[in-house]
Length: 313
Length: 240
Ligand SMILES: Nc1ncnc2c1ncn2[C@@H]1O[C@H](COP(=O)(O)OP(=O)(O)OP(=O)(O)O)[C@@H](O)[C@H]1O
Ligand SMILES: [Mg+2]
Image 1 (cartoon, rainbow over the protein chains, first blue to last red):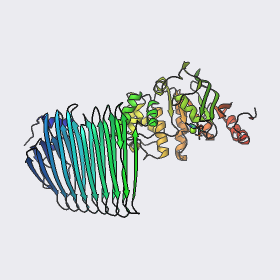
Image 2: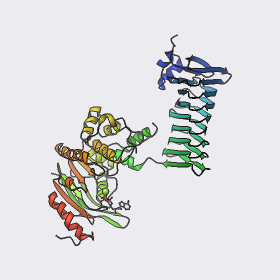
Image 3: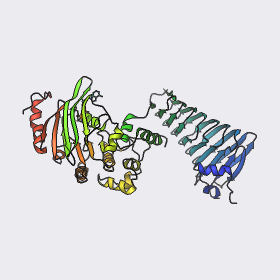
Image 4: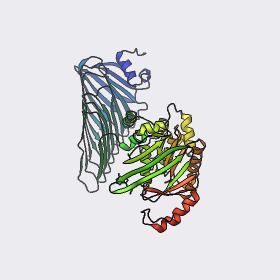
């Protein structure tokens, strides 16, 4: 069946979503508007159960042992309506030595008053790999409240790569709350990119608990704060396992007269062979970079744009 | 024709007189080599010409226009640019885009040409990011590629040769000749003798002034011999 594009799929395309993939029987996809599945396809590579609930959906995804899902799994959680609450419940299980890449778009283009809550539990068994990318595509106005919450349990040698980006439209009131428990030799990278404007209020809380030996976590956060927006980054890494390693790298750029940035890094080591480093730069655009670009003939505004665009990549 | 004229410029950093009633003039199409000991004030001078720091007093004339109150951008638009001694890193910016920034409407072919002039492989570097994963010498050569892709009249090169391996030094030398062929003036800051010899004229910066200026070989020899003996760096006891 060829998919007839409705409003959400048009927006999905605008948001950079891969509409062609939705017509391909070889790729997995799931498109949700509010609490309804409007399009889906599932290959033999994974188990996918979706239940439509009153205010959202609940989703169970399992990748079986030794299965490597070839193409990305395309997900879209949208709300075309102006006022709605959407609760997404996710349970993911990656069995031993399995892998997949998930690409999710969250689209709220017409928001007047929208709340999107996501609550995910992700279990990565031994040597499995999950790469999860979540792209938000918001309208330029309205009240949007975005609350992605996830707890990730990583067993030995598993890898979790997460990228969260909110670059289009207003960010709204964002509470991003991710906790990863890392087992032996597990690796986790949490990357967040947010462009906050107007009265956006963004809070990023990421926690990596390095429980297993030789586990490794990287928390990388970039927020650009314009107008009267507010950004708070509360990242935590706790080193428990032998030779565990963690690094957090947070840059918040203030680019608005009334913008406020705050970073509260928490680094704790409870094992003398563990090591955690952190770097943070909070404030205006780097002067050396600015001077360099201006010496190429860019105006200050153009140079700031180039630096900000690079940072949010 | 004089392109850049610096008259009676003073600049202090903390309590040190870095530039003290400093004068310099560079002609159109001329390669002027500035030498001097570490800390003499060469980079400071480059920054003052580019507008990164402002002189406390004095006059800066570029094409006979007083530029001392102009911003970095305005100076760059008039035709001044600077390849920095310590080039910046810019997270997320591709080298290809960085090179193109300096000239509106630049194409990939322009980037390729700029790369060739400093011996960089286009396929290896164009898509890479201008971040700290680049080696020091790579970053330096990218900086040169970036300034050659500009319609500038005066190119300040602050130690373009530092951190460059012996194999690639030939490209840096050719690069300077190329700027000259293109009719640009170059203010070349260097510590390397064979680079000095590429210049039309050389000057020694010491005690905040150009204490000697002229034919590159002579100036270089004087610096090596005369200046080593002096060691007081006051500029008062130079053999005239
Ligand atoms: N902002 C500053 N604050 C304090 N001192 C400064 C400042 N800027 C420059 N200086 C000092 O001024 C002097 C000139 O520095 P400059 O970088 O211009 O030297 P240079 O000739 O380029 O040296 P090098 O050959 O090592 O590159 C040095 O002693 C330096 O420490
Ligand atoms: Mg210097």
